[in-house]
Image 1 (cartoon, rainbow, N blue to C red):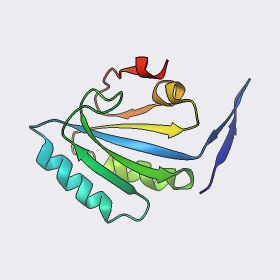
Image 2: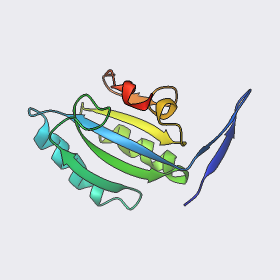
Image 3: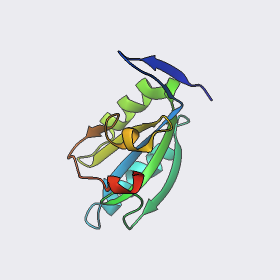
Length: 120
């Protein structure tokens, strides 16, 4: 597993991997399932379950794809092309859950409010 060190003005952060959460609801479940099945054929992703309930800080049903930092370019392009008008919420795993889900977060599609209180 590769880890990347990134330096900012006053900090350094290691990003060891990323999560991409596909958001959907009962009206888009079939489309989400198609996207998830397609993702399973891509070697860069580890694909989680389709959750037909809110899990963790996520305000909608979701499915998590995990990818390594060195695969970010290919993963981001794949997510962009395979969005199908759904929302992707993407965040790194730096060891700081609050920052990962807020400051370091990337949205493709509609942005939703996460339940960040669980990280305090």
